[in-house]
Each structure stands twice: as C-alpha cells, then as structure tokens.
Length: 75
Image 1 (tube, one colour):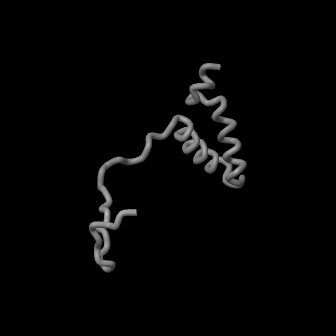
Image 2 (image 1 turned 90 degrees about the vertical axis):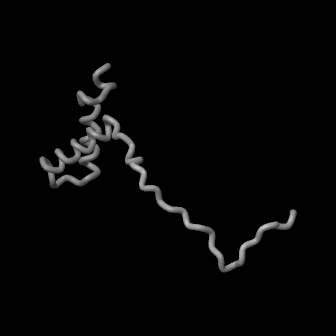
Image 3 (image 1 turned 120 degrees about the vertical axis):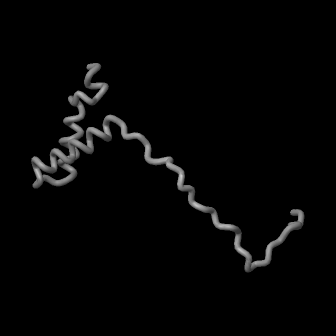
C-alpha cells in the first residue's frame, strides 16, 4: 500500500457536514394511506373501546370496498 502523501495532525477533525434546509418535504401519501388515516380516526371516535389492532383490521376490511380504492372500483 503506498504511503499517504497528505496527513492531518491527529487533533484536527474533518469539517462537519451542514444540514440542508431544502424544502424536500415528505413523500406524497398514497390513496391507501390517506384512507387509513381518516378511517382510523373515524373508528377511534365511533368505537373508542376496541384495541388498535382490531381497529386496524376493521379499517383494512373497509378499504376493500372503499370508493377511494382503485382496485375496488375496477372489480
């Protein structure tokens, strides 16, 4: 292995990377994600006593016949 031609003193640290403040933002939510957010909130209001797992099962079952579901509209 060839010797390094440029060496830094051991106390010198490499420059820190700065965080960009670009407006990249989040990814756009899919139709399923939008439906699930709304449906989970609706089910939580209408049936607050059921556990989250059961509520999620109900919401996914409702997605199968939802008008927002492109596959349900085609079938």
